[in-house]
Length: 600
Image 1: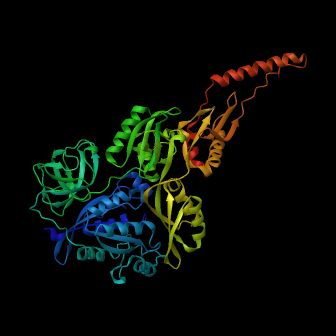
Image 2: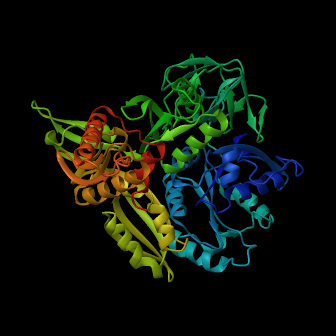
Image 3: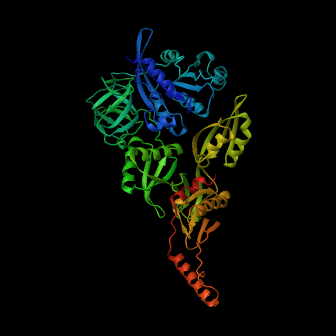
């Protein structure tokens, strides 16, 4: 009976206590015995536990008795970091309700607002909850006022809980049953199931997580994915409590998993519709956009890792993370490697860390960059070219427009810090949009900014300027033309492709000088002079020289004829000239992180 099912998720800003509240819900409903429960129980990945963040959304089925009736509650715990907001949007599509969690000490933050609007657009019933009321610095009354003023809730519908002590958890469960509508669906209709997540199991192949909208899904069913057109046979279905438990068929309204002998994650598409293989007129469910990588960087083998080992590791990584993409590339400076696409810098760091820890692969990362759009004049007309590697940008003469991705950035900062933050945004080529007061002490600033200016260290600078109290959220809004140029770095008059970057023309000379000053410290002195240059097109905008290691060849001459000394010095000079012509400069790996550190 769908009347006794409730599907809901928990959404909040990062570190507002989603996973801790999920622990109390698991404990209260008996889904996990108290002796087996560990803190942040649903965060199973070692990196999630260490960093204290959720990376992947997790689903779990619980049973709860309310007013003498047993209800099935399907909870999806979602990430809070902006890099993983696509996980949140997928989770919302599988639910009818959402718990919107706000920290009693920090109040409404940037991601709180973003997730609130996502839930509203998805037509979900929202249960507002203030968490961490047990902390001495908690201000639940002030936060309740903020939520009423900013989000439009009524004071009496906002619940106060402590995810740590469990206070108020029963009221949350009762509110979910009372306020979240049961799923609509017909168990007798043809099968329609939304595929909202998947992961790769070494022994069983791809495990898909589905929300059954109509019909039933049972072991032995022949199924077909409408998006990819591929057909499989169901080997096992079940629910997550929170570990997979094989069970009876899943019916309309249920959330569960299915194993269908799928060999690769590429054979399934998140957001696709699953139906029976023999069904004729089944319409696909509204899915969601594929997450597009916005940050790219090169991964190259280093240390004991070779190219083949790195390729195998990346293939395994992509099986469990469909949003991570990679393709082979070659660099004159670094050899054979891969250009990898990520959803943000945190996503990039986590993939690199997992490669090293779980798969034992050492990688060298080049400086990250965003995707650019170039309008090229080909003679027969204009053509749009998308470039994810600055080294591939063609000669500037043929470029009519140089477009970069832009983002609408929402910043929530203390009112004392408005001046420094507006200055920071203006320095990063931001365009002011509006100011709103969240409360007498906190302000929402909105700016349109180039995404490349946000992606490196903007968040760190924001935290420094606001003493840790500022938060941000962004949404990509498209591409716009600006006066951008490719900054080339030349060592010994040879371009080092891995150090090429895209910068605004007004800052090219300054950035180029900073990069080559760092290179001068990183590259060891050779027996010949090494010129380091930064160039835009054919124009050198900055230059530094690494002086040669000098050897005193005349030390053995004690006075005597001056021509003997001259002869030795000329011989040394000829040797240096020859060495300069044939000698090669070895650039250490640390130098390739120079572009990342130019603003330090």
